[in-house]
Image (cartoon, rainbow, N blue to C red):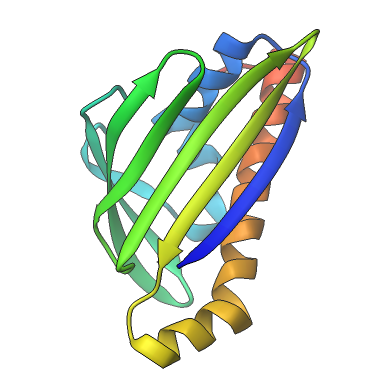
Length: 153
């Protein structure tokens, strides 16, 4: 199993940041580099507990699908998305939000496992972990900009 943890500090209300993170339309804006589309389940607006979304995107030159299910959510403190169909053997992304004075500590904690035994592990070490980290950081940068500048779609 591999783990990625990214902490982002945002000066905005916790409820705003929470909703930006679960907004399908904002996710699509922040992932335009991979031509991401929501193709099934919740395809726009705010995803809720017990809902799914299926994403189709171009990564590493291939169009891939990834279906996520939201098994846990406590507004506005955290939610979890877990892969139910896709390229990973296992994928769980926990989004947490902690209010501190006039800012929020937003933490992305991702645990995943690649398929293909040794080759999957090698791909993860050489390429995938860095790619996923950058992907989430770009997304978080957009959320931070929207939240702090009140340009909420």
